[in-house]
Amino acid sequence: MLVYKYQVMKKNGIIILGAFFLFVAFAALACREAEAKITGDCEACHGLYPGMLESAPGGPLKFVLQNALCVDCHTNSTRDTLKHIGQVDVPVVFNHVEPVKPLAGGNFYYVSRDFGDRYGHNVDGIAPVDRKHNGAPPGYDRQSDPSVIGYNPGKTLACSGSNGCHGDRNIEDPFKAIMKNHHAEDRPIDGSTTARSYRFLKITGKEKGVTGIEDDEWERNRSPKKHNEYTSGINRLCANCHGDLHGSINTGKESPWLRHPTGVILPERGEYLKYNPDDPPPPGKTGERIYSTEAPVARGSLTSDLGEIVRPGSDSVFCLSCHMAHAGPYKFSLRWDYDAVTAGEAGKGACFICHTEKGE
Ligand code: HEC
Ligand code: HEC
Ligand code: HEC
Ligand code: HEC
Ligand code: HEC
Image 1 (cartoon, rainbow, N blue to C red):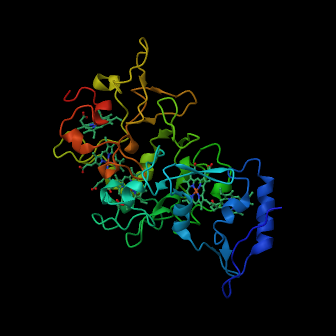
Image 2: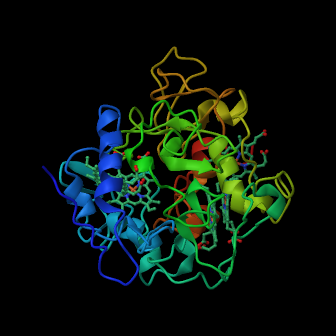
Image 3: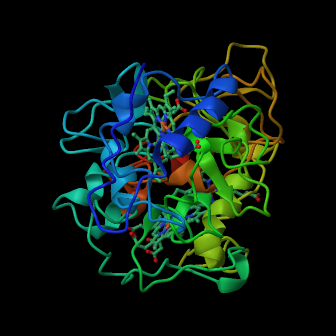
């Protein structure tokens, strides 16, 4: 029988809810174990982080390690982006050395070193507060943020909670905002709970979470056939903190070009009919193109047979067509080197995956 070693008896007034709580939790978990997402050797994880479930008498559970705990468990000191704890694979979003096969969101390695601030989200525990934006999300618009707490630029950006992206943004505490979800049933991904939202992206308890289809390896081995599927719901998640960058103001052909139209369906005409020209579909497949992992599209509807087919007239350009959600090797957390694109080095940028006839 596995025994927890929560290290909780060390301080005055702090006692373990202990055997009783865990017995109840264990019993509850055992009942839904067949469904639970993380199962297996409890001690492998809970022994690593003895403070994970600590409580003062009568008080709420307090999570001593907070955001640092999320970062720590999802970090690897080697180049590999999956690490193993017991029988479980942990998706790694922060490698201490340059990662091989970064996962779908990119990798926080690129904001952690001397690259500078421009390469992505400066999350607490990984990078200091961004100097250009001084901790505030660029384009923040309180009206577009459904969180009752709102973003607090006086505090650091976290993985989850009201100052983070994952979990319930109506809850300030990063740990509470995600509590119970690592062990919860996470299918179907319908946005009804945090676990049942795409990658725990719930927005708030009241809003419907982000939907999509999750690649079982977090895109570690992505290809046109095997990848995550997104819906435009993720634009709304980004708009929580970047609302002004989401609207239609300053989009279009004006110069300077500030904001790209987002959520717009690839028109069924002109250059868009040649989306991803370097990887054409077999002859005879009119109206069908092949998915590009360099400039992905969001799906109009999620059916199980999407695979590698992209359909202008149905699939749309979205925030992650151009940006990595976490961080990456290029400025503005872009998927490619924008300087090379503006210098006119055709073919170097994902712009041309959609704008196949530049200047049309
Ligand atoms: C791969 C790591 C991992 C393993 C293995 C693991 N846990 Fe957890 N557990 C977590 C994390 C992370 C959290 C906190 C975040 C959350 O609740 O989503 C957690 C939270 C909990 C909680 C509080 C939240 C809840 O769901 O009620 C309980 C109780 C718990 N675990 C029990 C167990 C038991 C029992 C086992 C063995 C069957 C186990 N855990 C195995 C990682 C793990
Ligand atoms: C003890 C290790 C551990 C800790 C601590 C932990 N996680 Fe995880 N996390 C995991 C594992 C293992 C998985 C993969 C579970 C699975 O297979 O879906 C995971 C999955 C995730 C996912 C992806 C879910 C999906 O759909 O694949 C997110 C997002 C996440 N964790 C966020 C967090 C946040 C935020 C915290 C802190 C509040 C946190 N994690 C703390 C181990 C951990
Ligand atoms: C909880 C708030 C929050 C959410 C949600 C959020 N961001 Fe951010 N974002 C920030 C903050 C704060 C900054 C500025 C600090 C920094 O760059 O680390 C930022 C900066 C950025 C930058 C500029 C990066 C740089 O270093 O120049 C980009 C690009 C970006 N976000 C894209 C996105 C995308 C795409 C999404 C949706 C997947 C998103 N953000 C969701 C808070 C958020
Ligand atoms: C077609 C590509 C494309 C799409 C789609 C796109 N962006 Fe950008 N974004 C860019 C480029 C290019 C830049 C850098 C522009 C510049 O030079 O200021 C940028 C810059 C940003 C910045 C940094 C602004 C600053 O002042 O530092 C944020 C934040 C951002 N985008 C968020 C978003 C969000 C949120 C969405 C979805 C609603 C989105 N972007 C959709 C291409 C795109
Ligand atoms: C995923 C596909 C996609 C990518 C990648 C993309 N665009 Fe677009 N772009 C579109 C769509 C769709 C429209 C809207 C077309 C319409 O409404 O007729 C558009 C519109 C524009 C417009 C407005 C003018 C027009 O034709 O409507 C400009 C300018 C533009 N894109 C520049 C860029 C640049 C620069 C990049 C790279 C940083 C880029 N685009 C990347 C799909 C994309």
